Length: 99
Ligand SMILES: [Zn+2]
Image (tube, rainbow, N blue to C red; front, side, top):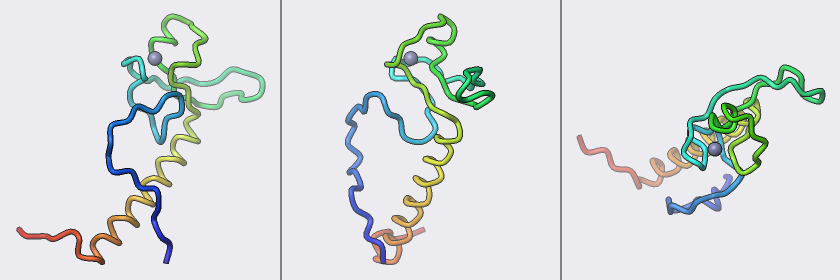
């Protein structure tokens, strides 16, 4: 029923700033670490942050920052749409299982 649109053809375009799903490495190549917010608007809220920024105590918005709850929600939505896409491909016999 629902038509999956806007599926990228796997091109390797670099997306700046916003990261979909759970980030694994920062744009700068550093690892991502999990931190807990101490800010007033978001006390004890967990977030992902670039390890380089954390260890150097920078305030640089060009590095990965993402709330864990939003990241997980993104990841679940991505997996759901991926599952639907695969299901549709199987239904249309685009995937052939030959052992
Ligand atoms: Zn970084």
